[in-house]
Amino acid sequence: MTRRGSGLGRFVPTLTGVTVAALTAVSLSGCGAPGESSSSSPETLTPKKPTKPISLTVLDGGGDLTGGGKAAIDAFVKAHPDLVSKVTYQTAAATDVAGKIKAQQSGGSVDVSLLLGGPDVLGSAQRQNLLIKQIPTNAKSLPDLAGIQDAPRSGFQKSSNGYGLLVNYDPNGPFIDYNPAKVKKSEVPDTPGELLAWAKAHKGKFGYAQPSGSGSGRAFVQTLPYMLGDSDPSDPAKGWDKTWAYLEELGTYVSSYPASSTLLAQQFGAGQLDVVPTIIAHDISNRKTGTWPKDTGITLFKDQNWISDGHFAMVPKGVSAETLYVDLALESSMVQREAQQERLTTGVLTTANKDVTVDNSGSAVGDFVQKWGRPDFFPTALGTGKVRVPLTPEKMQEAFDLWQRKVGSKVGG
Picture (cartoon, rainbow, N blue to C red):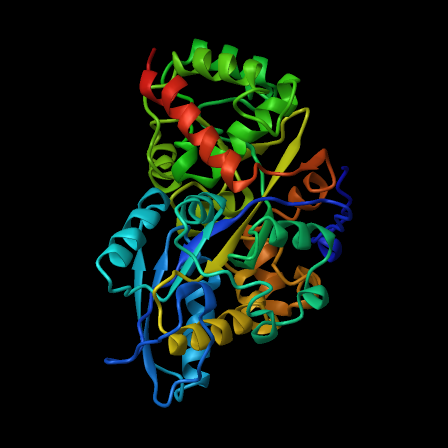
């Protein structure tokens, strides 16, 4: 569908009728106080308010802590000393989260209280039956989602199958960032064909991160079936013939596939790469931190397709009833106005709460967007092209496996 947006005052466009099937993979780990346990099975665990504060361990597999998640959690802890004594923060690559949780569950001692992440994390954890179903089982302990989610956010939420709560929402990319000192604006590729030709003429100067560990990598791979006219963009196994052929050929001109968006950003910032596909959060945050020059060039694809993304809060099986109670209370606070506004100063331009937007979140958000949010570009850009449904968690895992076999294992062809 076509996005509409005009000017900074309407920075968050209205996206009606879009079903989003992406999940975020941020992980929070937590354990009850020593000696606490629950006689309930993981499938029937009933939340129980703790009689004394408990400790939480938060495991982040998708960068949510730096995207406003940590600030929201810290604020909750400060406001609820009766529930939380301390929080330990951990991070892991999205590909490692499920294995970490599974190992703890197999050992009979789950330290992780809450997970944060996207469709990659949730899909892998759900496939291995590692998560507690929150909705509708514990819906009464969470906010009324109909009050904070519109159609696109609700569609994204439903794609979790009830195993996560949407805490971050972002129609985020991909588009092209380039080094203006190395590439003239008139020479920036903006179609798949031009990108292939440019990569061939500048071997090793274009790259993208592995889709399994990178939001921008996932967005880039998922947009190609639409731009190339594949038979079924929702089915990477049977409907991506043109995409796989294209990526294999493109790979002959790529020197490496970094394991994460962070590594890709470092390569681009160091001048090893001149052109990369990226997403809004990365464009903003990397320029803000100085990883990329503030004047980094930016352009849309001619046939722009926005692949939505998001992060979920998930609870692993094996936590105590007391930890589940605190998790649900914490998740509820993470989608409220103050916590969601905090995210708008970290690199995103939309939130998981439909009522929290750039133009109603105060001067701090407005100043941040004015300085780093490309107000001369993104409002217009977000009204261009179509918003596309990301792959379901199951199909996304399938796409990761196929990419590794067909593309990643043949780097440099």
